[in-house]
Image 1 (tube, helix red, strand yellow):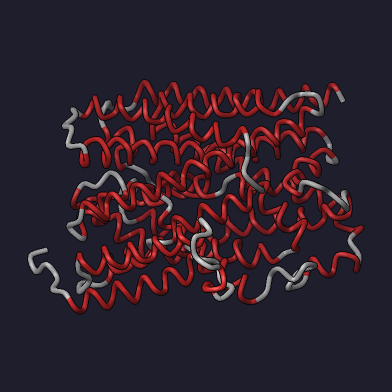
Image 2: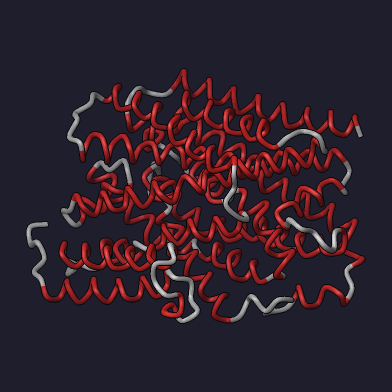
Length: 473
């Protein structure tokens, strides 16, 4: 027992030191201006962009939330979330490439600048900025919760949760504060590799120890709609639509589109992405289902992945724990950095009209990282729900502006009035349902953001057709 813990701690320690080293190296190398601090100088090639995008998207939700959901409701989560995430590769072409072209041409640094510029509307830029900030802090908190829970399971009983949460938060804050996006991208590259390898190792190890014991008792978990009937066609389709709409609008994901050096990385992403996603999501869901054999009645399903790791040989467990930490740290660091760029550029420079020198902007960015880190930590100390629940809530807040993105990229007739009206309606409805201010019956059994986006799109199209577009733009 003792030697296992020492081994696990050793592996995790080496990994954390490696991150610190990358942070320091980046700090020495990166320029003192916003493009360097927030966008890694717009210089990413195929390998770096693929791995940083992968590591940014895969989070504690993938490593802890997905197995937990599969443990309770069966493999539906793989079809609802995993398969959809694989198909997002289409969006790299339809959305990512066009956003990259626009950002290169107009010099955008934050996602809000795209919306504000396209519709000539500071209000829309502010709306995107505020919604992104509101829904990012809870999502960063998931990463801290996940990290602390994973470490707690490894180190065994007796170590309280909050010192571990403090430790996880400090490491992430450290390399984001000093290294900026250069550090985030290069730690992501390392973490992306660890992630895919770690999940593969976990899958093989769990399959060898539990896979052959699985008999017909797992059938309800391996078929739809799952043992509790959760994954009906409507839930499945709703989740698929949610992920397709939310992913490109995650501020940290959107900003990845700005970082490419050329069009080439988008072609690579299209091809490799589905494969990498399936390599991670399918094992995550299956491990959750097999967990029913090892631990039939868990009170807290979020613990299934760490508990399954304890049944594995310690060397294997150490690798997988490192992968889980890699997944959540690589998401939190990107979210912190992007949230900081939103506050610095969209709220201070643009909204409050405070002109800052590039160096002041980069310095303010570091202070903001610290502030957002503290808010997220405060949420993590008293987690409001299961990881998968917090994630679904957070995703809906990001998905509500999807019609705006597509109209902005593909519909020349979309006017400022139409965009503002559509955005206000879809966000108003989404937030109204999520906050419980509107009757749930009106959603028709869908996730609230889906009817909200449908109505918002209708308003956007209707008002645009009734108003004149700005011809010069």
